Length: 592
Image 1 (spheres, rainbow, N blue to C red):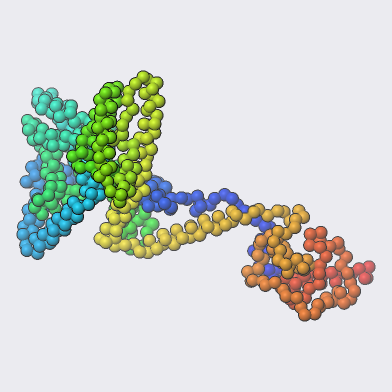
Image 2 (tube, rainbow, N blue to C red; image 1 turned 90 degrees about the vertical axis):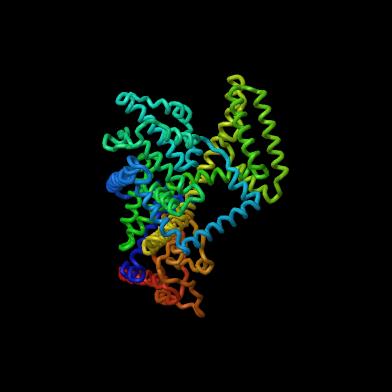
């Protein structure tokens, strides 16, 4: 009998019928992996952190090689800037070469068009209060935010302070020169060096020190191998390069030399801010190399460049990211003139100092002054500008420089007053970090990736393979969710009324195959079965014609079997096999 059944039912499906599998409620890796959704997928840094490399040893080896290579490039580019004046450097030669060809009519015409577009954009901005506020009235963040917003100027100011400290420490005994001209600026710019960038440059230019003298020091994190070299001449040369690309009205050659230096900073992150950030970028290179190793043949280089551009854009655009947040937060100043914005921010600074000292009179006076400025701005705000003003208030929520501190009072009262202030500051900074990581960084990383595709080509096969993989994982997650909605089946030994039985099946309790199929929701056949239609005239089976009855007790669940047309359904054929066995049993009883 088993042979007859197995000839009609596939073996694997027959086993499913014999041993119903319990639903597994444990999430699969595809279901548990959330790194391909939402913010994590869009942010290259979070995505890389959520999907670690398969081979950590090769990843660390690549990071080590990348660190050594980047530091070598830094030393190669920085060396002439450390011991030569700007006119003797490679950047000056580039500037001269470009200016030689910039005088051609076609080149001049191109740049004239660019200047015309810039003037048109400026006129458009001046006509809109929203755009004027967005570009001219930025909010003020904390010291770290302002330092990052200062970008290369902030980095170079910090490096200049470090260099002046090294000069005082290294050459005080050797030369007897204490470099007292550095004392005033070091005391003033110790914490917020970005604010005193111009003063720092003037101090170095007026110094009696040997500007081209290179100071080499092994930082603690370099394990005695890395040398951090710096000179005051390097600071002055890089100041010229910063001005070349930041100052309007310079020659085309100067612009090119300045942006060339900025590009090197984006690629190595060690030109202006030292070698600390090189370690971070080395990890990015290792991550990109890991992704390239998995790419299709012929697309490894383009995959590497696209991944590296996407990751490195985070560091390269750090200053722009901070400025974007500052200017979005500045939308709350819609209706204020730029002069009143500066007055408001100065009053906030005075009020917070008065709060820390417990000066109630000065605190109240500044609070009233700021409220009057806010009310005047509110009166000047049109209805369609209010949503933008609301965005500014939301983004600037909890900024330390623009949030009133509680007035100092008794120790207990001050402690309780600081609770809501601390919550406000904490929520605000968490929200701005989420804004940067979820919105700002993906925008810049997406632009960087598209630029890489335009220059080095788009890895079409690799991207298509990743897309198919994501689709397969999504389908697996969907199937897993559908399986979790199915209730576990009960053991077959327990009497239980089938929950869903078609009406045509209920009228035929002898149709064992179809009833078990519906009860356990396990399709036994890959071929679709349509409900059997009653025959025009009921056909009698051979045992019924012989007057033979079955000798066993009817199934307590399925009941007494009804007669069916043996040729009506495939399941009836299985019943016919069972009935053949009954006939054999009846014949045996006749002779016993």
